[in-house]
Amino acid sequence: MGRNDGRAVRRNAKDSVFVSFFRHEENVLDLYRELHPEDLSSTVEDVRIRTAKRVMAKGFTNDLGFSVGDRRICLVEAQSYELRHMQLKTVFYLAETFQDYMEERGLTLYD
Image (cartoon, rainbow, N blue to C red; front, side, top):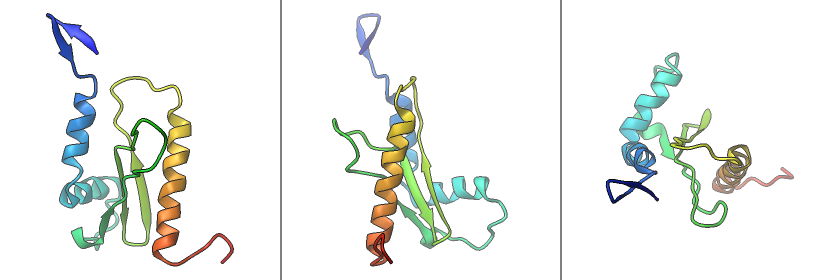
């Protein structure tokens, strides 16, 4: 942690606010509508939060993963600092998200 007038500075404060805000489906739907204004039919009931939980060591998770119906899966990160292996983390998040998606539907790689 850094120092600020003798007090510890939380470097992940912005990340925490981001994660806290987007744990609510209503806020996720608002983000989705900004990204896809052409989709006028999706509702809060179509939103499923898919934040990866098992990826990597030290408890790292992605900040936000969600799907809207069966049409789109979106993974979002809010970074307060540069992370050297962000692309690799994203691949791991994506793999876990697709694995969960396939298991939910009873699909295998060989279907």
